[in-house]
Length: 426
Ligand code: EPZ
Image: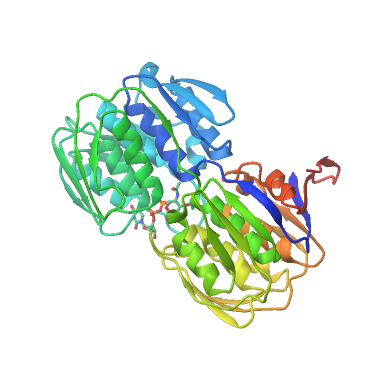
């Protein structure tokens, strides 16, 4: 089993290049299914979830050609059956997007129920509500959900909950439906806008993405396209927080600063210097970190996917901070791991109270999920001594070349096998 080993205490310095956005890529790749031609997608992150999604399409019959490390060419016209029930589908939440894409193209979809990070219940009721309003029926049997419609007809969907996945799935299903679809109370994340722009580049007619009302005029055909994915807001935020945690001076390159506004504001509130440039931000921290309160919210609020990372930073801030996880029921599983490093955190439901400590101490910890793993790296980089992080497969799902990127910033970090023979001292 692979681990990440970090000797903490080095201040991070230098420039890190941000990769394409995971949560945009895992929506756009299924979106290719809607096309009647070949699509080339650039700035794709070389991470497990993206490669998994591309493999699923290949197993369905699509021709998938990796042009280079960050570009894929996909021809979906060879997909004959709207069926995605292979075991791989169960490994990630984004597999649910195959429902919307296959339904939108074939008026039918048979997809294995999705997996993904375990934050408690992750329902699909809003996705199915939207499909129902477009005229589709669904049934579940043997771990496979089947959604089908005589004909998909546009309708008016008012989401009961602001859901990224439901917004994406309904957009995918409605792009080629007959007539107009309106999604109200829609999610506004950057990857929603990126998917809408990708679909529009194929000839879709989607307006309002990025606001809470999205209007879609269904079209009969969608052509092939060439599209480049936006930079990853959460990867960028992770490196910003890591720079602050180590008291370093780091330029985070290839970002859209507007996507980082809530993260930048929170870091400045903590006394971190954040300078914004055209497509980069510079993070410096010399003094002590100030405590603050965080409440996660749908975009443009503070992203839930940055909650474990900011909590690791607050663990070494001066004073008491409160973190309110308002999106997920149970996204504090990583706290026990941070406490093994000396963090003083108490959790009650969706609230974590963090008493800042002078310094964390290295310890053997686990990555309990993708962003929790990122939080372990941040804590380990700032800690005194050595930290070993297990279950790093979670981290590799969403962070491209994470060890190499941190090592290039001066971190003492390497991957090792469980028998401790160093396989890669980056
Ligand atoms: C997406 O998950 C992201 N995953 C998550 O990021 C992210 O945490 C989440 O959006 C919120 O931003 C991907 O993009 C692949 P939701 P998703 O539907 O779509 C409730 C990461 O770290 N809900 O916006 O599953 C749900 O329980 C991952 O990259 C319903 O009640 O999230 C939750 O409380 C982890 N019914 C809230 O809405 C539904 O039908 C938000 O969920 C759907 C959701």
